[in-house]
Image 1: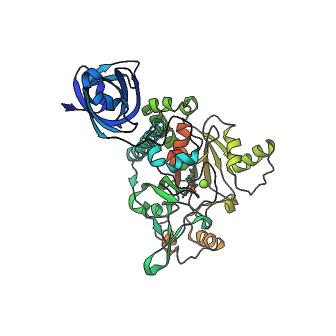
Image 2: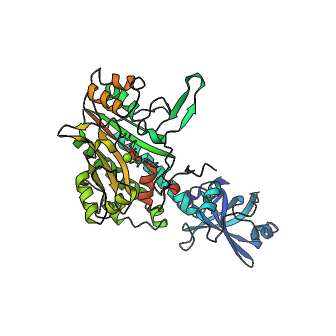
Image 3: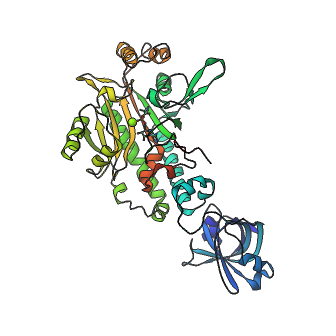
Length: 430
Ligand code: 4AD
Ligand code: MG
């Protein structure tokens, strides 16, 4: 019998085919049982009768959820059935009879679900989110490919830190002492610019973040881009174009998953250039008008970001932060040395920062001084400083947090659902 996947059912109507999958749901009424079968490509309703199956029917009637099966039957269109098709099952092979599945219909708390993440991923909601993530990452790669970027895979073991000394993970590395898990691939992307011009990386990054918030993971994925001969303004234009492309394409491709997630995509559809731009100074005065006592010079916290994003209907850049709130590599604003040429991009509806980006310091002496001012060891950054000695050019780039972007697109309350197996301060299992 021809094997097919459930997603191929529209082309198989009226034919007899074999599918292989898991029992997502079951209900019986007398001599008929309905098995909802999931095979990873889709779901269908299998109709099983005692007449067709004989003795096997009695086992099917009590078949535990998540048992694995091979079913052969005729494909029939049935608009009322989940997935739109039904299979009149003529033969059913039980591959494995499952134990009682721990995740049932009743409400489970987040801790229970996270401890059973290896089983929780089977739920339709979680699978829908993982499919949106897959589409988003594919569209990110496609954007870079279409726009002349070259992929550079940057190292995970690093001897310098990229962002911040307070949240490093270190690893014992043979006779070389401690190395750090990469917080960013950016510094290595910068090194490849003179060879490749426009580059990107997309991989896991690590931060020992003590922030226990709905926006923080200790292991998260980041897409980072770096462009030679690109200034701060051009960097913002690139980000606008990039974010609009990946959001529009993903919501179109994954429309049915977003319907399942009950995500109202009206706001997402407004993600088109130009985005709003406000300065850090304006952000501070907006927050103070809203009753915050934040002072100029302080970094914006998650709650501050939430307040600001609610004032705008599409993403908003906050530009030119005070130098002391940001990483050492950002270019000093020539007109205001206490600020840097950078922007954070905040997603609307309270989602907050999804991108951090900046023009990079390309002057050897200024960079060396900032490295020293940040109490970093210039010897460790020798290779990075070298880049300012052999054909230094103005250059800029940015990093998009994959989970934050998935959370925004899917309308999730917490980034932990946006990654297959989340790592947080109190969780590294399963
Ligand atoms: O703003 P960040 O720290 O910027 C960088 O790492 C730069 N090197 C990027 C670059 O210019 N190439 O991080 C970038 C993005 C944030 O905007 C956020 O979306 C995400 O990474 N991010 C996190 N996501 C989940 N959990 C965390 N702990 C995150 N920290 C940052
Ligand atoms: Mg940031």
